Image (cartoon, rainbow, N blue to C red; front, side, top):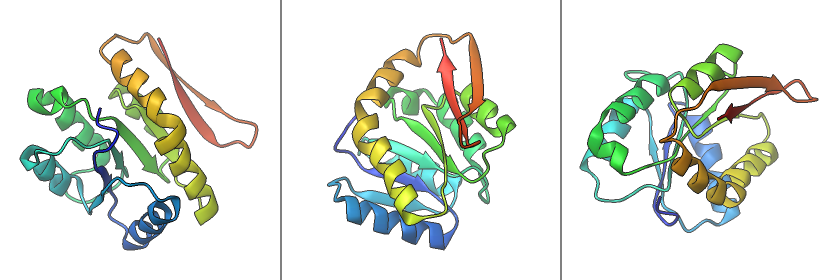
Length: 165
């Protein structure tokens, strides 16, 4: 994992891209942020680039190649697997089925896209600052087989997930 590498964001909504761009600028991370509107564009980039991204932050519902199909392609590509790029979903599609499907694809996180910029900023901060060491640990653990996925709701009724090993 390259903590200084680019952050690859796959998001088809222009407004969401603008919000995420603003959030990253506000937080002042030195990482280059690269946006793609669909999974196919991102896949082409990941095959062609020499850069080692810090992480991939992907929406689920996108044209051409959705987030689940992209994750499956990355998992089945030996060259991309060797890059050990953390893959996180950042989506409004936070159904229990989506979370379980995501973790069955060995993603490193599933985050619900909040409605306010302040909430999105807090989530990105958690991913980039607090989560960087945790992501490194999770990447090491992704090569182990996990026994089950657990999906729960917190006190606010928002879905969150944790992987049980």
